[in-house]
Each structure stands twice: as structure tokens, then as C-alpha cells.
Image 1 (tube, rainbow, N blue to C red):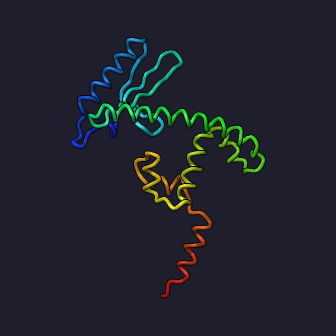
Image 2: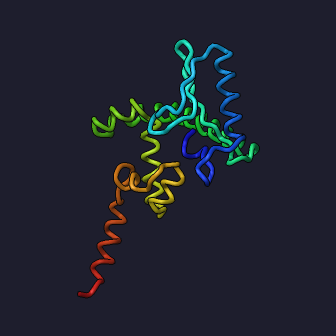
Image 3: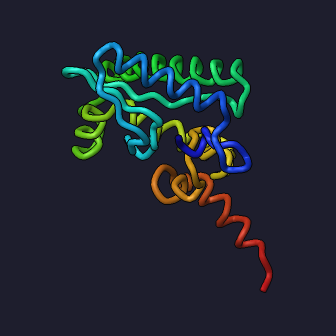
Length: 172
């Protein structure tokens, strides 16, 4: 199981083990081939199931033994994926309108991965709004806040100007 499925003492809870086994049996009974702990897009999913040209990833959410909390987490992730799908479709339409106003590399990227570009945009807006790298990483579920500063965000020109003005007031 992944890091999120491990309790504080480093072992899986009985609930999480039971859920994982039931999910795997269900998929195998329906003719799916299952794999354990597969790295997928930077995350390790508990079960990856494939059948014909279909693929699904399952991350067991036992809520450290709290079944209700685990179900709520799974439903939240399902809703988040649905919202991302809707936003991606809407972004594609918006990007078509502004495609001639951006540089060629951004134009290519915004049509290949509009949802991912949305993640960069949202992270930058959060940074510009005053959130720390730690808060942004936590909100996105990233393991380390370092990725925020090195990959997703840069200091805005407005913030650089403010920092310059503050530094100018320092007496040496």
C-alpha cells in the first residue's frame, strides 16, 4: 500500500487490508488483471487493474481504520477528478480563443495538457495570493514543498518589486 495507507506505526490497518483484498478479488472476478503498488504519474497506487483497452487505478482509503473517513476521501477524489475533467474541456475552448496571444511553446503545451497547465496557473495564483510553498504543496497533495518553488511557481514581478523596496530600506 502507499504512504497514505500506512498507519502511524508503519503497518497497514486491518480495514485497509480487507478493502484492498476485496477490491482486487472483485476486479479479478470481472476479468481484470491486477497489479500491486504501481507508480503512476508520480504516485504509487495500491492496485492497478487492466482489461482490454481499459485501465483503472485504485488507492485504498481506509482512513487509518476509520471506514467512513476512507469512503469520504475516495468520494472526494472521484469528485476532484470529475471537476478536473470538466475544467479541462472548458479550458480547451478558452485556449482556442487566446492561442494567437501566447508564445509557441505555451500554445503547444496548453493544447497537449490543459489540465496540467491549469495546475500551474492555480499554484501561481495561490503563491501570488500569499500562500507559502508548504501550504500550496499540502493543498495539491505534493510530498515536498520544494517542487512549488522549483517547478510550479515563480515570484511575481509585483512581489519582486516589493522585496526590492524592503531591501532598499535596510541600512548597512
